[in-house]
Length: 424
Image 1 (cartoon, rainbow, N blue to C red):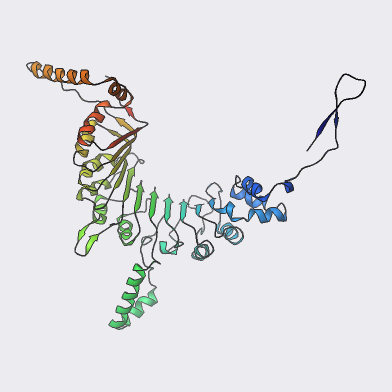
Image 2 (cartoon, rainbow, N blue to C red; image 1 turned 90 degrees about the vertical axis):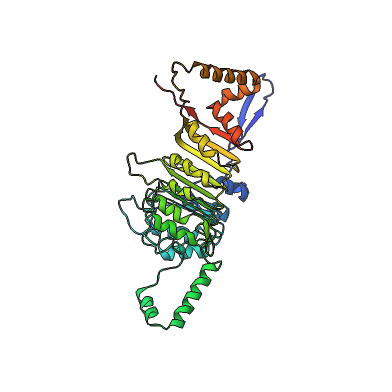
C-alpha cells in the first residue's frame, strides 16, 4: 500500500510530492468477520483452494457460516471421492441446503451417492433441511429412507428412480423373507406391529415438499407410495409424463371407511407439461375431476391447463389457482371458475389470451344486435375514467369484468400476459 505525503519546499511556489517508503498492508489487519464475509462470495471449489493458502485461511474456510448453502451443480465431474473429502473436512452442523450434480449424463459414469455416505451425511449434518439433486442416478438406492431424516424439501431434476424409491419401509432381504415364511403367526404379527409403530413414529419420512422436474421414471406406483408420507403438504410434478389421470385420481384425498384416504395432508399441487412436442400425453390433470379434500392451492401449466380447468370446479376447498405457460379463452376461464366460490386469488403467468369470438351478423337479427350494442354502450358510458384506465392495463378487460361478478372477493394477477392477434 503506497502512502503519498504532500510537502512544500521552501523558496519554491510549486508543490512537490514526496513518496514515503512503501508499506504493504495484507489481510492480517482485517477482522475475521470481514474475511468470512469476503470468502462467502467464493464458490465451493474456490473455497477449497483458498484453504490451502495458510493455516489461518484454512481455519477460516472451515467456519460453518460459509457452509450453510452448498451448491455443487456448477462443479462438473464431482465424484464420490470428492464428496467424502468435503464431508470429512468442511461440511458440518451448519449445513442447511445441499445442491448436487450427478453423473447420469457424464461419460465416466460410476456410483455417485452411496448408502454409507448418506448415513455419514445424516450424522454429521443433522440440520440439513433441503436437498437438490440434478442428473443423479438413484437406482443404486433401495429407498428414500436412506436420505437424511432431517430433510423437509427434496427436489429431483432429471434423475432416474428405482421402482420402490418412495416406499415408507425398507425392503427385506431374501433371508428375512424366508425367515418370515417359516416363523409362527405370533412372530409375524409382532413384526407387523413393529412396522406400524415405525410408520407412525417421528423416525418416518419427514419431507414436506417434493419437487419432481423432468423425472421420466416417476410413475403412478411412485405416486401411490407417497400416500404413506404423513407430512407431505406440497407436491410439484413438472414434465412427469408417466403419471396418468387414474393414478392421480386414486391418490386424491377422499372420504373412506377409516376416514380420509390418499394424500390427505396435501395443500399445494402443481401439474405441468411443457416439453416433448407430439408426445402421447396422459393428461394427468383429468384426475382432479373426482375432487380433492383439503387441496387449497393448484398450479397448472402447459398442456395440463385445458383438462385441469374442466375438473377444477370439483375442488371445493380451492383458494388459489395459478395458470401458466398456456393459451386460454375467456369462455374457458369463466365456465371453470363459476363453481369456485371460495377462490381468493387467481394468477395468470405467461398466458396468451385468445380474442373474443364475435358471432357473425345474420340478416333479420339486427334488432337483437342493436339492443345488445345499446346495452353495452350504456354500460360503457356509465363507467368512470378509473375503470377505463384499469381496462387499458389489463390483457383482456372483459375477463376482469366477468370474474368480478362471479368471484367478487377474488384477486386477479396478470404477469407477462398477452393477447393473441390473428392475421385476419
